[in-house]
Amino acid sequence: MIHMKGVFVLMRALSPRNWFFLGFLFCVGLMLSAFYFQFVGKLDPCPLCISQRIMVVAVGLVMLAAAIHNPGSRGIKIYAGVAGMTALAGAGISARHVWIQHLPASEVPACGPGLSYMFRYFPLTDTLRAMVTGTGDCAKVDWTLLGFSMPFWVLVCFLGLAVVAFAQFGNLQDRR
Image 1 (cartoon, rainbow, N blue to C red):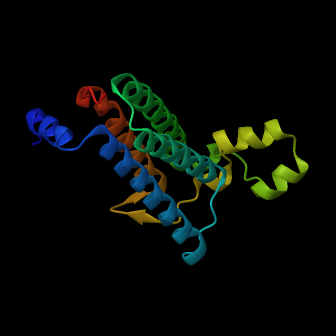
Image 2 (image 1 turned 45 degrees about the vertical axis):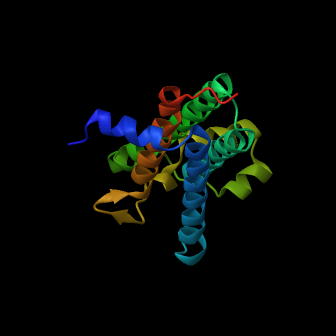
């Protein structure tokens, strides 16, 4: 069982700047994993996978900016809030992906053309809608770990990143 006192001691062991940098490195690791699965494992990403990647990059960039900027208490709150909310938005996309994967076959949305085709020939609003809501391609489970799909693990990662970001509110130190 995890004791909250231990969690707070762990959080205070590193400065917010270090936590933000570790969050950034974690996002880099997630993107490297995604590229490995795509280019080595030959698993083509679906529209929701691409959307999740965009959110991982967004969280990573916010955390990198926070680490480089090394702000005072007010700035830490702002960066933590933006990073946490961005991670929660990514978690929402991942949750939708997991939900689509668990739909009965009769309720799965229709499969669509590839994103490059959609960007070329479809209105931008239709392409963005497919990226956020998913298509039938998103229902396919190509890989699992411990019985859970990749979108589930990405959801767990987003939630972890949100916890790290929001925990910085309790890890404030007047640095100026």
